[in-house]
Structures are given as structure tokens and as C-alpha cells.
Length: 350
Figure (cartoon, rainbow, N blue to C red):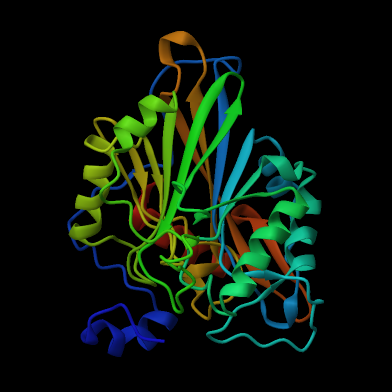
């Protein structure tokens, strides 16, 4: 397994793992945590809620979700996140210790889902991430089958040389979702077999795809950027600008850094560069800031498919001796709460 990073960053990675960088590489200005582009009422839109990486935990401890978390997730028309591990049929292991190789028990995921009471067919999970091939190609496709058996819609993989495009319909809205990863620990794609993860979306005329598939909104879920950084590089910003302003995407929700990154508004859409983690591993306290992004998408003819508002909801992961909880930030111990609010204020207007 090689590093995708330059040598200077690879050497500093252990430091960033324990103390994520707040260097603002391109002087980005913080956006508000809540913004409404168009005055609407609740009959004018659907809610798409996005979370960051659903990661494993040591000892396979299933996080306990506070009612505020489950209520928010349950309010979504679709809940979309990144499944940061292949999912297998093996049991939860109270002695499990994870380092660089991940393999998520099916029960770990389903017990998170069951707490929310959101039907599985409203869950969309990307498998397009660097850990997807940690247990090999066969385990990757087993993961796809398990998610489908649960009722979850997996995205990011292709079969039989198809486009990595998933289309969902909600309230008359045709939603296209594309997920891809900029690197993998271990390859699971075979050009000869025409199946696996999607790594690059260059060379595809997404405007034409959007037109031919009659999509009202096109959403991209890129797995990109450097880990344990709070601000994107200019190269990533240029990619986002091109995808939104030229390639037809309306919304980009990034993953991989394990830390919250800012949002950027473009003329044709918005990009949230990273939502950090939803739960899981990580020594650094900043990775315990757990954001969920609620995006409102118009369904009436005058703004059909337009992003008409968003709100960032923030929670925190609290690790106890035998349990792990996801709590509203307001209910976290004062010391951790103050630190997380200070870090949040560097990235968003609060």
C-alpha cells in the first residue's frame, strides 16, 4: 500500500493524525452554517441529508445515537453518506482492533440504521473510498451485495462497463448521484471485467448524461483531498469549480479528510469539501466533531432541482469506557465543547 501524498506530507502525516492542520491554503472565507437562497415553505422542497465517513470503531462498539441525531436523519427524504469499509457477513468482535485494514460487520451498520427508523431504501452509501479494497475484490463485491440485501442503495461501483450513475426519484424529482475515489489502498477495478470502483470521471460528458437521463439535479460524491486538513488545496477547488460550472454538477459533497472542511458557492451550485466523520476511529479531538448537512432541493416548477437552502447540524462523538455516543454539541462536556466550537468557527460562520 503506497501513499498518494507527496513525501513531505507523508512524513508529517503522524503529526496531522493527532493534530489536524488548520492552515487555510487559499484564504477561503467561512460561509454561514445555515443559508436560504429562496424563501420557501415545507411543501416546496425535499430534504437530502448528508453525513461524513461511517467508520469502524475499536471493539466494534456501535455508536449510540442521541434522539436529536435520529430525528434529523429520520426527517430526510434521502440520507447519503460514505461507508468507509467493505461490509462483510462476519460477527461483531469485542476484541477487534483496527489500524489500516477495515472490514465492517453487517451488524455494525444495521444497528446504526435501526436506531434512526429511516427505511433502508432511503439510505444511499458510497463505497468509492480508499478502503473499499482492503479485503480484496471478492469482499468488495460481497459488500455491494450485502448493502443491496439490507435495502441500501450502494453507489460508486460499476458493473458491465456502465456509468457510475445512480438515479433516484423523490416527489417527481429525478436525482442523479455519482461517486468516485481519487485513490485506493488496494485496487478492486478490473478493466477487462468492466466492474469495480470508479476512479476518474474525466472524459464523460456529464451535461449530455444529465440531459439524456432527464435529471433535475446531479450530485457528486468525491473521495478526495488530504487527510486531517481543515481546508482544501487550490487543485481541489479548481476541480470543484470545473465540475459545477462546466460539467453539470449541482452539488458536491466530499469525503476522506476525516475533518470538517468549508463550503464554497459557485454560480451553478455548491461544494462541501468534507463533512468529516459520522463516527469511528481517530485519536485527534477535531475528528469528533460530527456534522450532518441538510440540503433543501426545490420541487416546484419555478425552482425544480435548484438548491434553495442548507443547514449544517453539528454533533460530537463522545467516547466512554464501554460505549460511544453521538450527542448534540450542546450536551458535550464544556471543555470539549469549547474546543470543537472554536475549531468549527475557523471553518464556518457561527
